[in-house]
Structures are given as C-alpha cells and as structure tokens.
Image 1: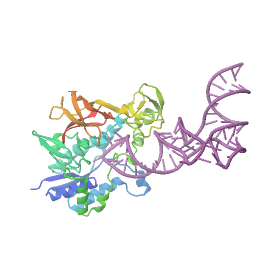
Image 2: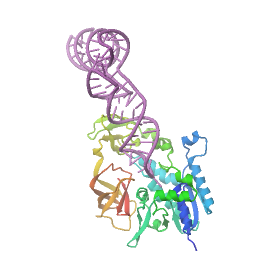
Image 3: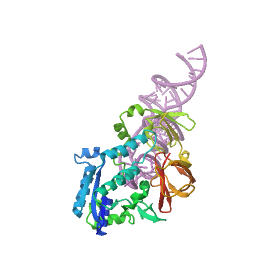
Image 4: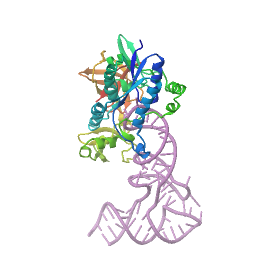
Length: 358
RNA sequence: UGUCCACUCGUAUAUCGGUAUUACACCGGAUUUUGGUUCCGAGAAGCGAGGUUCGACUCCUCGGUGGACAA
C-alpha cells in the first residue's frame, strides 16, 4: 500500500515540482496550503485584481486538482499571527532583528503540518525546500542540499528530530535548473519562468517598517527620533527610531559623514543607534541561545557556523554551553553579527544545531 | 557699525581660467524564501546682479546670507 504524504504547497514552482516527483515515486498525495495572513499589496490594488496571495493559494489548489490529488486550504491565521508575527514585532521592538522564516518553519510549517498530517491520515510530510536528511550514529540530521546555491537548511535548523523523521524533501538532490526543467517537461512553462518569491511573506511591498507602524498600536510612542552616536558616545545626528534599523545597515541612514556609515549597535532602552565603519562590524565571538537541546553534546566542538543566510560558514568553537546559552569563538572575524538572527552550526553537510544570536 | 572669512547636487565635500569630483541621501535594476550587505545604473549643484576674458565656479565690483573678530 502506498504511503500517504501531506505536501505543503505554496503555488510556486518548488512545491509543484515536488508533487510531480512524489507522484512519480508512487506516493499517495494530499496537498495542503496554509492561509497564514491577509494582506493586500499596493501593486495588486493598482491593477484592480485579486492579490498575489489569493492567486497563489488558488494556483496551488488548481495544480493539485490537475494532477489528481486532494487538496485542503487550512486556516492558520491565528497561530501565525500569535507565533510568527508576534515574535517578529517583539524582536524589532526590542532592538533585535528577527528571522521569521525560521520560526514559521518550525512552528507553522512543521508544527501544524504534523497535526494536519495526523488528522488526514498521512504518514509523511513533504515540502519544496532545498534540503536533505541524513542519518548518522542512529540519529537523523538535516543535511545541505545538492544545489549549494539554493540550500535552505539555514531556515530549517530548528526542526526537531521527531519532525525530520516524518519529512521528505523531494528537491534535495536537485538543482534549481533541473527543477525548472521538470516543470517545463510537465507543461508548466509559465511556472518555470515565474520569479522567485522573496521578502517576508506577511510584509507588503517589502517595507517592514510600515508594517511595524501599522501593527504596533503604540508604535509612535515607543519609537521616536533619537541620537546617532559613534563608538565613543559622541552624538552624530538624529535617527528615526531604533526599530527602523538593523546591524550592518548602510542604506537609509539619512546621514552624511563623508564616508560610508554602518549601524554597529542598537540600544532600544536608550533609543540610541551607534554608527561606525565597515571594519567596526567584525567580531570574533558571539553569544547564542538554544531553544531546545539536540541529541548530541555540542560543547567544545569545532563546527562551521553560518550567521546569516547566504554567507559562507566560518570555523568556530562552541564554549560554555550551559542552560541553553553558549559562546561561539570564530577562527576568523565575521562581519555583522546581528542579535535576533540565527546561527546555524554545520559539520560538513550536517546541521548539528543552531541558536539565536544574543 | 567696521574689518576679515566663507557660500558648489537634498546634505557634506573636491578641483580647475576650458567636459564640475566624491561620499551619504533619493530613484531604478541585479542578487536573495528574514533583516541587512554587495554589485550595476540614473537623476541632481556653482547665492544674485554686473564686469574682465575667446571662455568665469574660479579673477574684479556691488548686493544677499552665514560665521569670526572689533566696538
């Protein structure tokens, strides 16, 4: 009897091609698309048509019907708002830079997906992520995708072994080009040419600052203009409120210092934003928090640590890991350590764990 | 009121008697399932009025504005 697989479908090329592959492999498929938030983009209003979001949900449904398997649209708006958006707002309002995709993957995509899978009698769950799963010493680990440029393990590091045990990544062995080619072969030429999705899904028009203003009731009271200062505390100018900035930011500072200026530190309490040079952003150490413990003992290990998506992992040693808080010492300084972002710890292709930078 | 100094893209600056530089900001694009970074491209200026000169942002005169000093 074929195994029933619950496939998370966004309406994009990756999840659609995943469906094709799973069907070819003989799985019995059930498609599910999450309704996570409602927003309307200006660009959609301007064209007086349904928004991209609704269109993708419908496209996912149509694709599933076309391929001949059942599809469900599940309303996760409450959980999503509470968990992902809530954390997003809280982090920014504390002067940190959140990583909503990481949280969404672990809490919504997998957290809720497993529950839905159980309800629908599915043994396994699948998504169109570029990642693999590998076993070592009796434990399951995330493993980087064959297409290193598309590897998305950074956003998936919070998945637990229990979640991995029920997961399939149909695209893990493929490159993006191969995925496009498969879509074309199946007649989905338009989908193959579709632009990659990007940006935070619930933030319209790529403007998280407006989102905060619109979704934090007392935003204007809590986020007020304050001082730009340098490392010595000297006042350099006026900023628009700490929550509008992130570590390493150069554009949008609205201040001319005669040389490029970057945000090097954010103090939400004092509403101060420190500016410095590019060199000032290098550090050889960071502290991180682990929300749960992995099956292995990480303390003292030397790993490859990635402090942001699309940056090369750098060799680092894990120290003083106690009570879910640890220290990471890099063998070479890294640029732009940003509190709130994830640090993901690799050993070759395996994801050993990760943490939230403090 | 007198003397001296300054005045250049939105901001901060460079240069030169002959196409006005650079940085930041702004706009567009590339890259990217977070923020940010990076890359490419565009627009954008000589305080005003005269004069000298083939040609003035540059030199001269007057005016304006700002600053310093003097009283």
